[in-house]
View 1 (tube, helix red, strand yellow):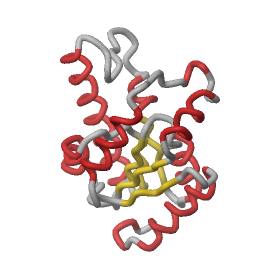
View 2 (spheres, helix red, strand yellow):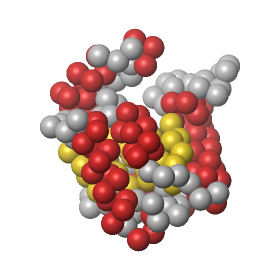
View 3 (cartoon, one colour):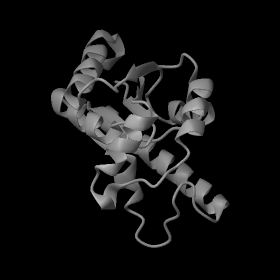
View 4 (tube, helix red, strand yellow):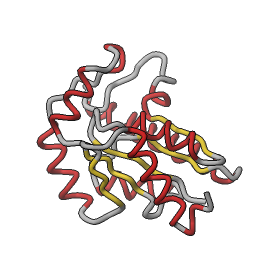
Length: 177
């Protein structure tokens, strides 16, 4: 059974949507990148933090851990839903090599202004201070091309977005949901 990898810009709604999709599937597990990162008690370096080599090492550790969890849940008959920021084709291919994702990729695109706004209304402890939205959006569109499914969520509620992903999963033979 494949996992569903949901990626997008900060504030796109990845965490909310993966939680809602997981609630709608009969056997599922939500694997949040933020929650896995929070397991590091001391020495955490943010993905864009310094020193850059340590930040990159920790991002790779996060991705390996998410994939290991996804494999364990998939082996036990659950559909794993990974919520992670995947900024490049190389990072996506890394996931696809280590987790049962194949083309089960969802990129939520809510538009830059919507993402910025959603970030401002989050609990302050959950905000993601980031000002590289324009570059990230351009990079993701260029890097991912036609890989997976780009879902524009700007005019959708989180529930409507989750419903669309669940419908896609039901139509995809590998999912077995």
